[in-house]
Length: 330
View (tube, rainbow, N blue to C red):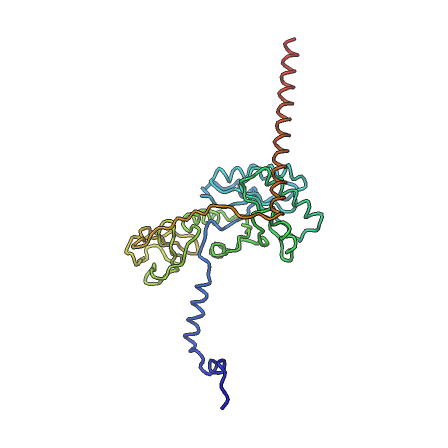
């Protein structure tokens, strides 16, 4: 008698519909990314940046300007920084005068290209990135490229901290918190409440939250998606939990509930039990590619040239001032 294949046996015994649905649901939950407030990057206009007054708690907020008008972002970037944001510059297109545009104050930079660059534009973009790196050694520098620009992404990778996917509109806070693509999201005008929610998510939902299965936070008996903060050992849950709900955790410790608009964040600070706190610091260096060495050398030369030009200008001004004083005395 011929042997029946393994696939035939598997097909002859299908899973019950309820079990199949349960497995699919578990897979979807397991595949979801933990929420991360500091992972969100949003882009706003200078007018939006100047309008708000609430603290931004380290949120990555970029001021969006066209390549020819980067100077317009200076007051807005400084305002965001004064409100506690990790203020950045979002430049649409390749700056025409990179030495001037890249001298703007920022902690983060995204140069955004709506279309794949040609060879000439690619060379100009490298020049702008070299100027940015030379003038802002500690800044995080990115380039956002459209789909179909794999060649440009490979050529620009040595010049930036990361190549970002195409910029998209900001849809909702839940999606942005669970995304792991690092892309920049454009926040439409009149979204001050959303900006406030992003700021509060920085501390409520820090990086590196880990799904935890043996401990759960429940709201009115319903289990919420629960994570462990390895830095503080707090339990963190996200979901719908209205004010006044019966919130319980396996630890029995009191819980704090904070609303972020369409959903809530529940934190249980004393969740250590028999666990230990994780603090990992990684130090060391990696081997640089030839392209990265060249890019860093170009950035150093650009910074050195800028410093020399600044000193020459200062010396020239002092000499002119002293000459004017001598002339007055004579």
